[in-house]
Every structure is written in structure tokens, then in C-alpha cells.
Image (cartoon, rainbow, N blue to C red; front, side):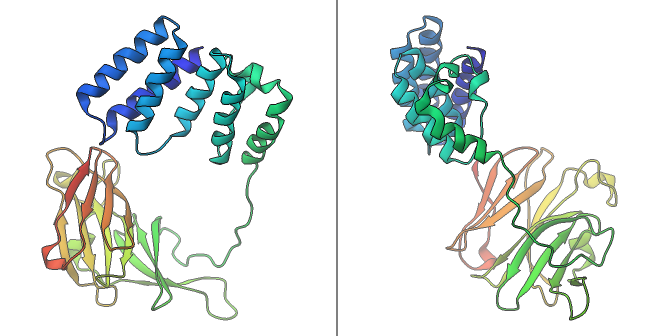
Length: 290
């Protein structure tokens, strides 16, 4: 029962953060769900959770577990099994036997296939092989991207506030070849984090943030962050976008869509930012989610 309470609370929190969910509507659903749970009105709770689920962009693993628990309270073991099958298909694992709501399901022979898959999900996948080591001991690498035209990986370094072009080792050696991108001093003022190759604009995007707990930059800069587009050959900064916020920020993770849209997250103050496709000279950081 305690796990169901925690699952319900988290599911409602996820719904509250969903961009598609109206705040007033959410508060109404939250109140209904809490009331149904207190009354142990499982049919009402089920319908409310399904309504919340329709407001979310996709069914979350947490919602699958919550729905399985509610179906067990309703005596719908077959429906609970379907939810657990969907959960197992995500690749996650879960100790069903220790969950008071789901433990009876774990003892059902029909659950064996799901149990085997959950158990398999917990086993490590060991398919990686070492290609080469990095020649710089204190590099503190953070992120990696690949430029297919030059067959070069570009790697960011927190320690050196820089980017490195990395290519496979020369014959007979075990170390990759790492060549620093000649960035100007201002681009190396703060630690470098995310890096992504923009095939549309033929530019290398890198995030740089004056993170608390990391030395090597003026203390008055702490909390500042920027996103730079650079020429990987010359190191020239083509475009610099400062994050305009009064709160400390760290631009930590970045991805570029197939259409060339750049997405980056602020892992301290929260939020997702976007740079739409188009000319670099017109590029703007636009916040699309809190």
C-alpha cells in the first residue's frame, strides 16, 4: 500500500509538470484521485488515473506500476498482468514479490514469463570493447559527438574548458589521437560540458557553464552559462548565446533533431531550451519547458 501511495504521488507530480495538462484541470484530477484513494474507491481511482494518463505525452513506467496495483485491488489480475507486461517491455526491473499490492500476482504461474523478463532486464549487457585510451590523463571528458564527414569524434573537457578532436589510434599504438580545438580564451573561460555536431549548419555546438564546486574561473561568474556554435577547424566562435536568467544555471545535456533543431537542458534551475532551424546569425535560445 505504501508503494502505491508513493507511485500515485509521483504520477500526479508528473502530470502537474506536463505541458499539455491544464493547471486547473490537474488540480481537479489531483483532488479526485486523492479522494478516491482515501475512500478506497478503486474504480473511481482507476478512471481518474486513466484520465491523467491521457494528458501525459506517453505512458510512463511509474503509471504502469500504479495501474497494475489498482487493477489488483479491483481483482482484475489479467489486466494487472498486461500492465506488468508493458512495464517489463521497457527494459526496467522491479521486485514484484516485495510489493504488497502486486505480490499475489508474482505467485501466479501466468506471471512467470513476465518475471523471467524482469529478471533478464537486471542482467548486465557486456558488448562494449575498448578501442583506445585517451592520451591526456586529466582530461575529465564530459560529452562526445561524431562528425561523419571527417570521421572525427569531438569531446568536451570539464578540466581544460575546451574541446578535442579525437581520431582512432595509429597502427601499433593503443592511444587515440586527441587534438585540441583552438578556441579563443573567452570560449574557454568556463568548464565545457555538452557538445553536438550540427550537420545542418556545419557547426559544433558546445555548452559552457561556471558551475559551483569547479575551480578555474572568476568567482563572480558563478552560475552563468552560455551556448556557443564554433568552427571545429579554426575554433572560431560563430555564435554565442548567453542564458538570460537571474538563477544559477548549468547547460548540461544537448541533442539535435533530424531537422536541425537544437535542444538543451538547464540541470540546475530546470528547463528545456530550443534553437529553431535557420541561419546561425538569427539563432535564439527559446525556453520551451520548465
